[in-house]
Image (cartoon, rainbow, N blue to C red; front, side, top):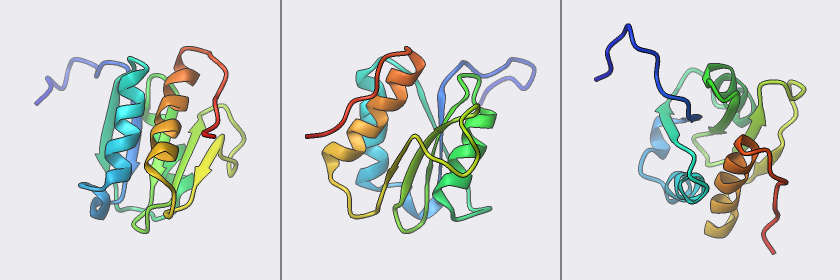
Length: 121
């Protein structure tokens, strides 16, 4: 457990519904960030079940200002705290593939490094 007086290290926050804790999507997104060398802080959040709202909340709590939200059904959104509310930089439906989830995580890392976002082919 962290010392409450010491701020957490910068990381992309990933707010997810607790039912997704062991999901492949969560794992792949985290791996995509890891590939970019950017820390990910996954945090369970059951206060809302809207991917964009979760992502926005995550971005506002992240020192890096980048957040990802995942709903109970597996919908995923990526945003930046300065991006217009209600719009995602990337959005994936629950039926996405492992490579799409990993790419979303990599894109979050690319945002941190101010690199262009990439698409999965």
